[in-house]
Image 1 (cartoon, rainbow, N blue to C red):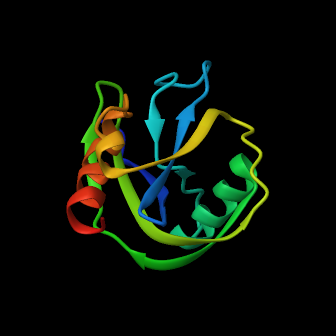
Image 2 (image 1 turned 135 degrees about the vertical axis):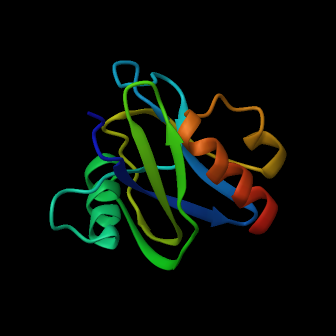
Image 3 (image 1 turned 120 degrees about the vertical axis):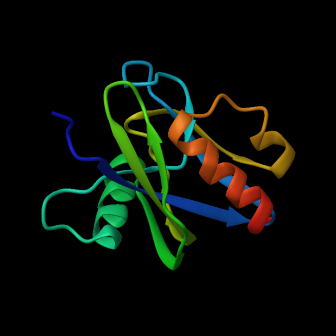
Length: 132
């Protein structure tokens, strides 16, 4: 019996032509791979509330959601992830990476050189093609 897909929100934050990304911690699943920050939906939680909670908990960021982007699904051997990206504008940045190894801003060409979490690759490609 397969488990239902895990629904995960993520923030696509673009500023001055650069995209914000976070590198997963050494002890996380997919260690040291890059991702768009966010996290798993909790039962009864809206996608938007999940995104705001995860960004505050993990990075101490506050954003305004501009729009919901298309969902992307990726199957790992152990689970399937439905990634729900939101285009966001940074409202408050007192950045403190609690779970990530590092964070940075990247240009479109730089994004392609990163070692991305497999679920985030489709989002990155969409961002470069449609938003930059």
